[in-house]
Image 1 (cartoon, rainbow, N blue to C red):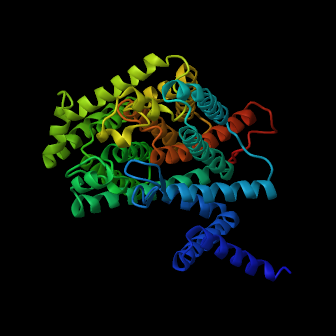
Image 2: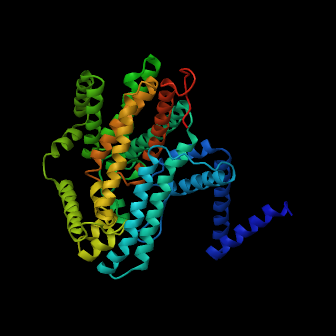
Image 3: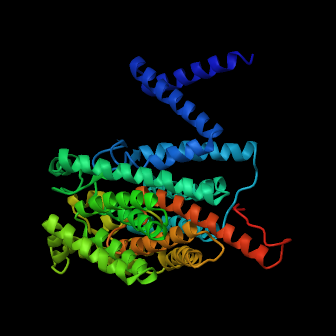
Length: 480
């Protein structure tokens, strides 16, 4: 009987594939996909760190591996979605079968509170739908699916946090994330040379018609620029605290590659995010750093005059600025109608459609505005925004405390400082784009927060020992 189980599972998968496709060739293809997913899931189940590495590198394909579920601007399934489902399902299965306890961490409660408020706002959004267009079950279910997607990516924090017990593991996590970030930058260099004109993609698929800018596989210079700014700031913070010259040279080379990619995005919002984080590092570490980066910036400006032009255009009311202002005005218009509880999570699109605020060219920007905080306020109301700000302040407070902690190693303090500077820059970046809720940024953010929370638990445990709650001042390296 046991020997027949794999065969019966194979036949069941084939029958399921055939019923879905009603075509033999497509059924075989679906069967191969199902079996491949099963093998990957099994590997993730048996080797959790292999799953985590796969999850980290799922940001590299970006929008390149994308399955649209409808016409232009409709919902799509990304490669990162599939990998995240496999990783989380393997983690949850392992928890149910082997380990019952889940580490929430210090950031777990505000994160769960944000998800709960998003669900409450979605439920009350049924009344908003009724008021706006009449209750539309399809729109409500779609909002629920997007809430489920938010929950899924938020669970990554708990899953990754559960795998981290030592500072060495946080270092290992960071190195893999850094490697994935370098691949994103390298893919951007290739795209910049091979496919610099995105005009055709704008006509066919609704992407912005960028020309001569680094988009990488994310197809958007502003989002990939914001991500690169965060990673570059963390690298710079670790570099400044590094004592070994070989490690210094390696980190300096990585930093210059990331900075080069960041410059080629020609994204003013990414430049601002990097400048804010750099100001934090300069004030914290050394004023000389600000002078050195100013000189480096001038050199890059001489090498890439367009970067200087983009910075100078920041003081002009150009087409991009006008588009953002219109987006903010639309958000305030919707907020004026639903000022307290908002429209409901991910129900902004039908409300904007009903109010006639969108044109056919806004098809990819229907569900939010060019500002993450405004998007959250309009969608989840004032309670949702307050809880989200609580989460943001908790993250910044924790990273700030760890950057000053005497209970961490030099690497732990410098890495925490880099995360603090990077996240502060990302918050500023989110004032110009809905970057905090962009999935290719949200996933790495959850991974960084898991590492940060592990270091926080480690610092607290060392502090308890030094206060005499254990026998003797023994060194501790494990996160609870």
